[in-house]
Length: 401
Image (cartoon, rainbow, N blue to C red; front, side, top):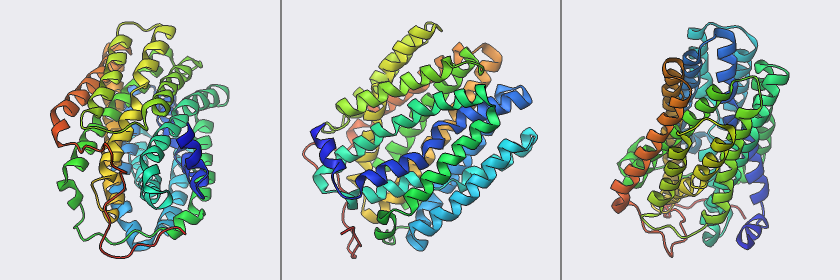
């Protein structure tokens, strides 16, 4: 905790950390909100899964492109335009009774316009703190984002039950508007410039840390997405139980991140952390009782933030600074495809075989991720004794004074 307190005393860290958290808050709300909204309007979890999948696919495709454009246009102009478009389109989807095909198309475009806050902030971090504090900052970021998944599901289900699913989506857009404006206007966003990468677009995908983090991130996030849909399917959309269970799941991740996320990272660290996730989900597959799922998902959650810390730290320590934004964006693309994959598979499972099978699907994704980490651990960097900062570029880079 002493290290984290030292981090928060560094100039600019608190504002960047909190503002980007608010701007990313809709990620913890929109999937649940649209699952509830589309099911209420069109009476199909499969249709709801398709809409959520289309949103995720749009964001996944646009992420690497928009992150590359940040080097051309600058962070602030690009993030501002995309935030305005995203708020307008998502709000329209909430207010107007579109058909399922129309919602899929508009959702895809809205996903494309979602501002790439995560790649932007993780590009800023190495220029914001001393090298020795970078890995703890990634850990604090991964842990803090669990607040999104603790509060987001509870807030979404509360608003949807008390006021309506339209209001739940509009609440998410309020977070994007306010948090996005606060983050975009922070001095750090204007002071850090990303140098032009000498690699062609997509060239970072030839590097093993990026490929490993992208692939494992995809199946890992598919796990979370399937859990989310399964819990909503089990406990319905008209009560608070689903939101509370998902919040407890995220609380486990927050605890795990604060306890273990700042530890030194060895090549096998990711496998061990993923096994915690898989073991908890195996246990969760055996029953649908509220308290059983709360306990088993809390245990599973203990490995989530520490695992995400490894995925991002492996990239930060092995890529040039000019390549980090695009690298993080490709990892984000994998994760967003995972959201779509997990929600679609879970939606089909719920409609055809029952909600409990969605938890089983999540268990399969988790086991697949752990197996992938075990197979690829020999290509993972050994970061013990490393500060984890990106490799320097040959040209000058503006930093925060």
